[in-house]
Figure 1: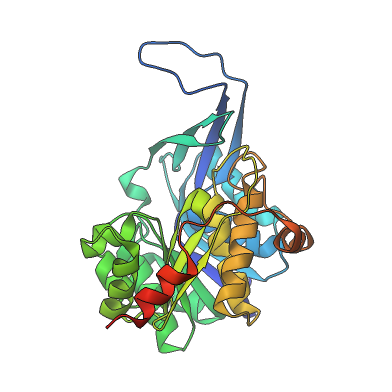
Figure 2: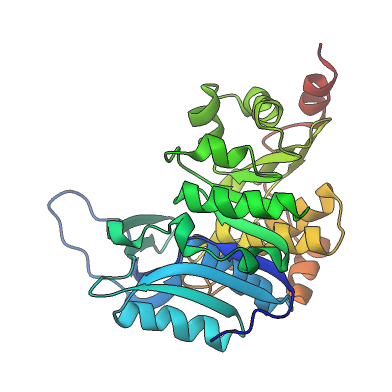
Length: 323
């Protein structure tokens, strides 16, 4: 059994997945055939990938998740073990682990995801042990199994442990989860889904005000990241890199955000680091194939060329100072 006697830097509670990455010369049109370039079976999943990145950067990491008793589940266990991560697995007998087939366009690195998750893989509050959460300096969750994520976040909050969340869809119970989240890092579409407002300059402050988050941010893919800290906006444009596979870029951004928080960086530094780490992650295959070393991320931050900015400083100042 894993040793839970020591305090770790980060504990992640949430999804893992086994991905079959299929690289294509182009996405197929309807009723057509395309010869693929290469296929690989690789570990992935939002939270499992984030804690793996943190472990590679030298943080002590713990993971809590659910798998089936199949080969894909064994792959997940082996991968986290080899990364030195303390993992607590709830194993469902006679069940297929979550799996995905990810079609990657060779020219752009963009992807299409086909996925399957057995309902029995839902992580329940009763699956969790309080000690797994309390003996950590930071908790990271996703918004898929919201009741268990909310339970973990409530325990963390009661002990003054900061909570970061990776949110992309309006799953049942996500509003209750948001009330327990300090740093909500969402997809570009999520704020509109939760607030009914598509303009991020309006929806991000509204989210922060409604749920009491310290910081709310939306990752914008090739356009970088926009964040609201309750007082002002922070915007970082993406680095100008030619992606190989964008799978896992958001997961690595979340890992970088947690890493920055734990190392006492301020919001602009954290967002810069996150954009650099996420950009470099797109240069490898699969969710974890492009996790770069800290030194490489720092070099990109210093020397990297940026893509055009989606927001100007004047736009952001105008919103901040408007009545």
